[in-house]
Amino acid sequence: MRRVRTLAILFYLVSFGFNVIYYFISNSIAELATPEFMNEQGRNIVKSLITCLIWIPYFINSKRVKYTFVN
Image (cartoon, rainbow, N blue to C red; front, side):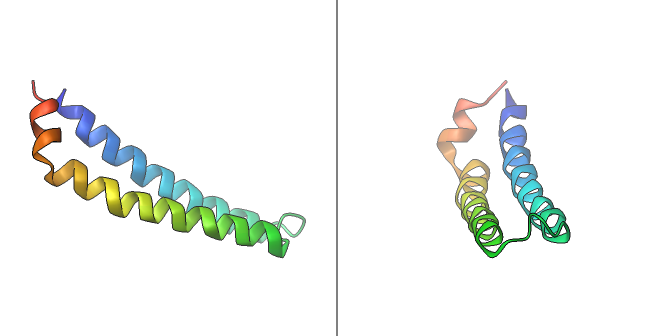
């Protein structure tokens, strides 16, 4: 069960990384690089970053999480 904490943190980091990579790949494709699309992708990166900044420290520091996910 201790791995759940690590997997949750990894999930948030991979999600953030996916959004950043998707932004740069779609920016390199001319048909997708419309201003509206890039603004939406920029908002997705910011949302993902905020999610990481909230949930990762919670999973690391929370006593509730520590006591819930034990062996």
